Image (cartoon, rainbow, N blue to C red; front, side, top):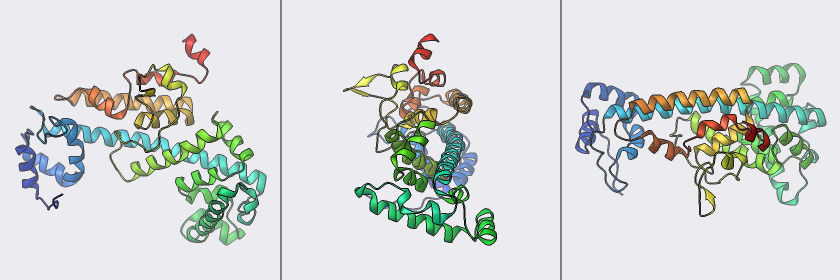
Length: 319
């Protein structure tokens, strides 16, 4: 693989034009490339190529069209991100409430090893996570007003304050080492089983980080597929070799997880926002159909109906 050399704005324009892209307003394109980064913007070009092996664009592909996909992903990412923050705050609040109520609100109380799972295969994980959380107490106390307030005035940090400075990843790991009875109380709030919630939390954490760092999100795939849900069957998603073709490890799988964990009104608002930006993108696409983008996202044609599906099959059948 050759070394990617630096290209100035004029050279970047020339490369895209050589590959068949139409760029009528070059000064505007240069401004966008300078602001948004050519190599990041270039990450959206593959949908407009003639084939996976052909490096030239489909006839009629314009710079504005590819930039529209870039802007769509940014808008989509922002919608997802703000709702992931809601889920993150909720799970942190629920976990801290449950543990504080049962084990105490001072760190020397709620961080006792006996409060966590006694499974032999998780003993090292329990020890390591307790160390991580204690380190967060030391590191974050001087940096955050709430933590420093409690340390300076009371000599401890309650868990409901500490979780605010813990990463989503650490909180997901914390849930995974709780006692089964504590895990069940928390999972029951979401009408999920323990294993499902344990699987969902790292996926949510991963997407939260992708969004925070402005990575390409709309066609991201996770390594681990989620389990089949009522939403797969109720939406009539097709199967191939016994597996659903959408909603397993694509971005629609994330939508399914968020359906499980957001309040109904929050989820409906989110789907309306997503529907709006999809319509905007469809209006701006001239070379490729919107279905090509939705397919990369793992969105079935009737994806909007997920907002109306309840977990009770009989309620869905009555609609």
